[in-house]
Image (cartoon, rainbow, N blue to C red; front, side, top):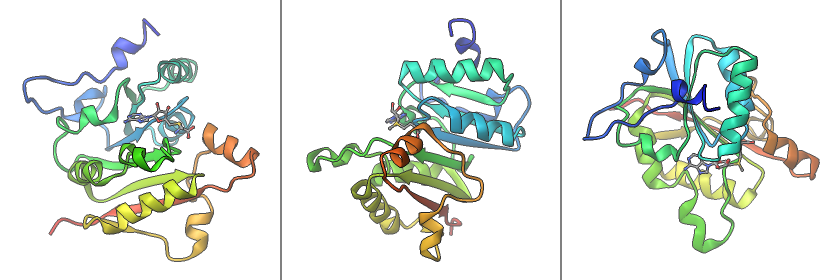
Length: 207
Ligand SMILES: C[S@@+](CC[C@H](N)C(=O)[O-])C[C@H]1O[C@@H](n2cnc3c(N)ncnc32)[C@H](O)[C@@H]1O
């Protein structure tokens, strides 16, 4: 971890400077995708391997998760992942407009108590920031096994003018998308008899 992390860490520039995400990677990526709260990193790694031309930024303050990700990066010789070992919101003030092609928020913390609901990630403030950083037609993918949290998140997205829910039939949100990668929390939920929901949203074209 001590050896690998410094070379892969996303450094947040100070002094109001912007961060061009393309320069984080050895070769300019075809697109840049982020995952908020990658946990142990299995989804991030699978996406990076399936899409070697994409630059993946994983955000996760949980140190054991970062260590688990680094171990996979090393053994699988993955070159297209960079790590923000901190709160994903650190990126919000420094990433330029319309630079992200996909954003993943998978099995985020549900904060079930009503008084904690404002800590849920996809509230209006964070959605405004994502809408700014995401390209037209970019994908925002959310999954959860907590129905209260999923309904709340769906309400936030439906109310937001920059996003459109892509589901047309119940099968579109009950079944995982075609390119879905299983995550650790998803496996735990299914083992406990809970069926997750999978919500894909499109960032609408700017007027
Ligand atoms: C319930 S775990 C799910 C992990 C993984 N996505 C999975 O499906 O197995 C949620 C993770 O989100 C991380 N997290 C919560 N808020 C975050 C934030 N603002 N920025 C980055 N990561 C965050 C937590 O540290 C935690 O590891």
